[in-house]
Structure formats: C-alpha cells, structure tokens
Amino acid sequence: MQILLECVNCSHRVPATVSRLHCESCGGLFNLAYDSPPGGKQPRSPLTDLARNVSLGEGNTPVINLTRTAKYLGLRQLWAKLEFISPTGSFKDRGSAVLISAALSEGVTEFIEDSSGNAGASLSAYAAAAGMKAHVFAPANAASGKLDQIRIFGAELHAIEGPRQAATDDAERFVNERGLPYLSHNLSPYFSEGMKALAYEVNAGPASGVRHIVLPVGNGSLLIGGKAGYDELIAAGVISESPRLHAVQSEAVQPLAAAVNGYTWDASDAAPTVASGIAVSFPPRLKQSVAAVKESGGTALTVSDDAALEWQRRLARDEGIFCEATSAAAFAGLEKLIASGTIHPDETVLMPITGSGLKEPVQS
Ligand SMILES: [Zn+2]
Image 1 (cartoon, rainbow, N blue to C red):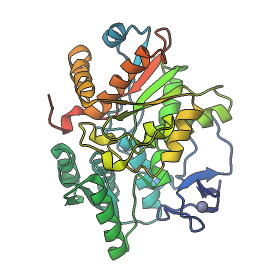
Image 2: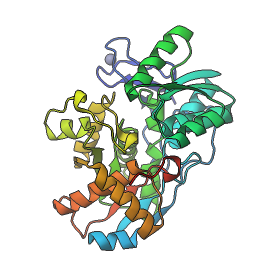
Image 3: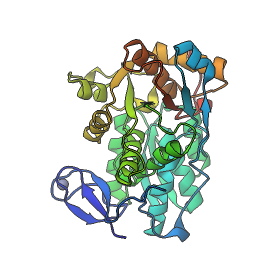
Image 4: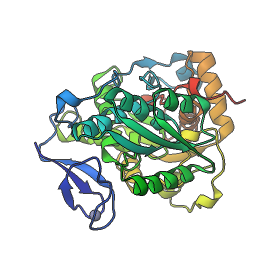
C-alpha cells in the first residue's frame, strides 16, 4: 500500500513523511491519502513498520450511559465515551500514538512541538516511550498539572509568557534555529489520523447508530479525524450516514462558530476562558472543520464559561465524572441544542469526554 501526503488546497501529492508539513506548491496543509479502499474493520493507517509502533494502551475507551443527565435534559438516551481514561488523561493520546510511531519508523530522535497543555503532555509521554527527546513549547500559564506531566516525562519544557500564539511563534523560531523536525499536532495530518479510530469504536459498541455527537472544538483534530473515520465507514459500506457532528466553542474564542454560521469574529476580540483546550484563535485547519460540521449535518455554537463550569460540577455530582472545563463546555452546548430543537428528545446522543479534571485547579 502506498501512502501519500495530499495538499488540502491544491491536491498536490508527495510521499508521506512526518517532517513535511506544508505543500511546496501552495503552502497548504496535508491530509494522508491511501491507494487502497477502506476495509471497514479498522481505520486505514499510515503505520507500516509494526515493530516500531509505540502504544501506551490508548483507545478503546469505555462508553457508558449518563442516566441522570439524560433525565435532567429530557433525553431518551445519552452516551458518554470516556476519553479521559487514556494513558495521559486526554483523547490526544490517540493522535500521539500514530504521530510518534510514524516518527520513530523514520528515525526521528528529537523533535519540537507546541501545545496549550494536553497535547504536549501526551506527546511527551509517547516520546519517552519511544526513547526520543521532545522540546515542548507551552504557555507559562497553562494548567500546572499539564506542565508537570511534560516535565516528568523528561521533555524539555519551554514555558513561554504571553498568549498561546507566542508558544507557536517561539517553537517555529526554534525549529529554524535547530533544524529539528516540527511534529506540530495542529499541522501534522498524522495526529488527526489517530482520531479515526473513535468512529470505528463508537460504531462497533453500544452507541452504534447514534444520531448526534457533541464535542468541544479548538484545532479540530477530533472533529476532522472523527469525520474521516465515519467517511471511511460509509465508503466501506458499513454505515449509510455519519452522526451529526456538533462543534462547541467558548464565547471567548469562536472562529469556527463564526465561520459555520456566517458572521465575523475578530481574533483581537479573544478573551481568557476556562475552556483552555479550545481557546484557539487561528485554527490552521479551520476550513476542514467547517466542512466536517456541514457535511455531517451538524452545527457550531458557543457557550459561556459559567455554563461550562456549572456542567463540570453537575457531571461530578450527578455522574461521578470529573472532566476538565473544556470537556464540560460540550454539555453546555448540548443543553442549548436541545433547547433550540436541533436535538430532539427522542434522538440518541454521544458525548466524548475529552480530558481529565485532575490536571487543572477547579474554578468556581
Ligand atoms: Zn498545495
């Protein structure tokens, strides 16, 4: 099987490698492209050197019923997929496993990454397991639990003052200075490729045939990768349509909600938010996120910090689930989608609970 990088703008194709992030014809980002049709049993994967696959036991997260929350919202059936039960406490481990395995098979021994926290923690863990040195650029004010993870996994933490973008800018400067591979989880197609498995798992489990999935979206790796997984299942003839994918953003940072709903949002209006995992003013794959929402028949909407924090407390109190505020924001979105009639009480819903609450201080 041949695996290629295909430009999302101009469809220019080059052989797949983790170190190439931009199309030389137009500067666009890449998707992975395969010359074989999907089989429908498991996602097509860019990993061919099985001896070099790095795994910490990611994926196959539990799906449970949220009966109290369903009752509170008036829903017939509400599923949660417990993504925070992952090796480093977030769904990012799915992407890290694929990206780091591919990097190891290409002989990478040292790399650079920037992150608001969870992805940096995750890539640091997989780098440790692969015997690689990671340089992780993160905002100095990121949650202390996430920065502790990056440090204890042996990565070199570059804590950068200023907004999230400053960490990206400094990482890019360091890449130019040191000439090391830039394994940006926001830019690399290998990272979101790891998310496709979520669609396969949902489809094979108790929530098979679910009508709506509501998820928090910043850079969009779970949205884009999840949609790609459903597209493969459709192409393989396993299912006939994707669940509707609803993207929830913070009122403080809402480029995707603006793009989907056709209004203007200026990044200079970005404000601090408790939903730090989705506080991304310039998501590099915005167009793909818009397409994933629209093609699935989904919507994009925003929620307040107060609503996210209220749902964080409610899930802990009613369900015994302690998630981060970013994950709870999706439930605030679900409540709005039911109130607006977008989700009917008789329709089934699945919520990926993306990150653990244990990494950040609880805000009230
Ligand atoms: Zn191109």
